[in-house]
Amino acid sequence: MRLDIHPDRAFYRPSEPVQLHVSLAGDVASDVRILASITHLSDEMARLVHTVHPAAGGTVTTHLSWTPPATAPRGYGVDAQALGRTGRVLATASTAFDVLGRWTQAPRYGFLTDFSPDRACADRTMDWLTKYHVNGLQFYDWMYRHDQLLPPTDLFDDPLGRRISLATVQELIDAAHSRAIAAMPYTAIYGASMRFFRQHPGWALHDAEGHPILFGDDFLAIMNPAPGSPWTGHLQGQFATVLETTAFDGIHLDQYGDPKVAYDGDGNRLDLAQVIPHFIDHTKKTAIGIRAGAAVVFNCVGNWPIEEVVRSAQDFVYIEVWPPDTRYQDLHRLIVEAQALSGGKPVVLAAYVDPVQACNARLVDATIFASGGYHIELGELGGMLADPYFPKYGRMSDHLATALRRYYDFAVRYENVLSLDTRDTTARRSGQVEIAGIETGARRSGQKVWVITREGTGREAISLINLLDVSDPEWSAAHTQDVTPVTDLRVRTYPDRPVRRIWWASPDGERPQMQPLDFDTGTNESGTYVTFTLPELIYWDLVVLE
Image 1 (cartoon, one colour):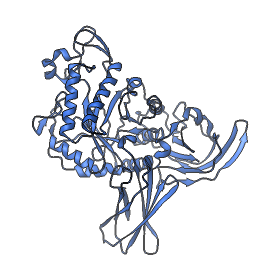
Image 2 (cartoon, rainbow, N blue to C red; image 1 turned 90 degrees about the vertical axis):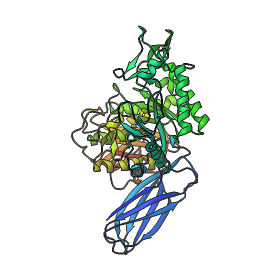
Image 3 (tube, rainbow, N blue to C red; image 1 turned 135 degrees about the horizontal axis):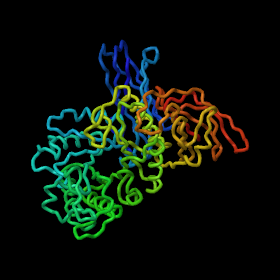
Image 4 (spheres, helix red, strand yellow; image 1 turned 60 degrees about the vertical axis):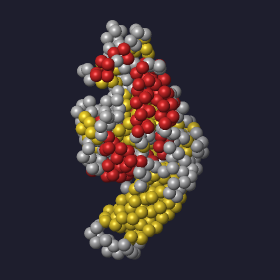
């Protein structure tokens, strides 16, 4: 018998009722009670009971309802059991949901790339994404041209010859909205077709020799996005038309990483790091002038120009990761630095991992989620981003899809200690977390148990990530073998304040709920410490000190 449970929306706004879809597959010989416990961290908030009736060899579906407190942002866990007539547990399942004021508070960003006229799986795709709590989607290369976003007719070929239907785009937007998933249209701040460039050669950016700057073997020309330029006025008009004509929820802005310095048509030098924030702010003004609450996000390719754009009006920080940021610890550093520079804005990383590298995928997500960040990777049904050109995405195995669903559940369930209203303390605290017989710490991320710590009001979260079998600490270097679990880890840490309770949880097993840990307190030359024993570490363990 198999039990599955998941929310009907990617997130809920304050005072919205939560609907939990329940399905029970297999021979059900008698009535079965579904018992669901809803928790916030270690506190049980509600217990729901529902009886389902037999269905020989089929699937029984039902739903459970609960209205959470209006407090936001807040994550919840759900643990369900199917109980037989005698009270025997027949099957178990878990999920999570959260209450947010807006999706950009916890942007679990995903992608779509298929807008063909014969696409027929919009609802299936959105149902699948809802199970992972993906609450925002980048519609990648949905447009007619970079300089003319909406097509002259419903059916058209994009610049690379892909057949696209605007009706399909609109159907996907509607399907996303019905599940509280935002739809964000991909655009580029300075890309224009060669045809458009030839019509407006003076609008382009030039190199030091006065030659127009082209991209992708004369695929696009790079235009001038400076404040007051004709191109900026043109593209802002395109954004306005898109938001007036469609139900998109904002604008996703891309760049190509270069040029960083260029010249306008009159030979004036432009520092793009100074230009781009103005363009972002202009886009935000355009967007919210048409749609209240519209979101704007900009791609910091290779983490550039992060120092300038974090102060702009973008709703969260989006970083496409490129060398030299190749190590697991670089993913953590990028998130933490962007959080600090932006005053605590959410951070999304685009770090491309081929799903055939299942071990890498789990370690990358463990690192990003433990660091308080988010990862754009899931989108088309069963798909995972494996390449910067999104249509080249890969497909997850059933095993990896199941594992990552647990990871996304875990990140939502524990977001109040992992991300929301927390701050990184790894530089100060990781060296004060010791495991008997095992190397820990924050430096040199390979062949050790890596420690990441975050702190919130009254709680400290300690994440332990198992890199003991990882000889190459580069997140994109394929790990040919799975990690080896470690059992009975004797942990000692030196907290700043007295400890009342300690809890432990992991997304790697069947029980994601917090389990209490017994602990001892002592003092040595380094200060006052607590010691406790973790039953097992597979990929990622979370310890919460209250």
